[in-house]
Length: 211
Image (cartoon, rainbow, N blue to C red; front, side, top):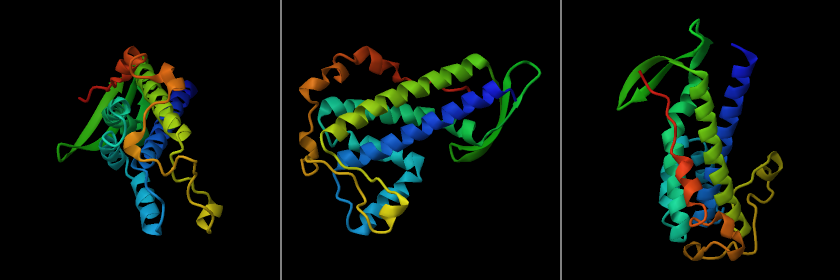
């Protein structure tokens, strides 16, 4: 395949990876859990390996913060869920350049409890739309994540050194604050739902059609 196609695939997959990482951290920060004993930390690490589990847990977290932010977190979870078929096709599908000038992908997936074979072609425009959509989701995930982090919420941050006994989480002065009381700060007005309503509506996911 052309190098430009492989580059766009790599950008898309890395965008998805960062979305999943941020969603995982948002879950931890909204739940407000302490990362001890080890079994609680282990639970979060296991969750990191389950993308659909992250989406399901993220939806539950939408009820654990101020309603204005809960709406955004719920919308983020829905957008991620809608984009999973594209993400899995990009990551696990076998892609090749078709003489028609389109990209052809072959993939197996479980749909409604049954294994299904997919062989479909996608235009360059469809690929670009999927990239743009993933970037919009990432932007919203970053904004939600940063707002929670600035309020002092904690999330797991592991390195090889920390696994050998160092602290397993980042921390802030507001870590013990009740999650139900989290309200957007006044200086975060540009990111408030009222001023970002039109932008938030752009989070509808562009799904490549299945044959």
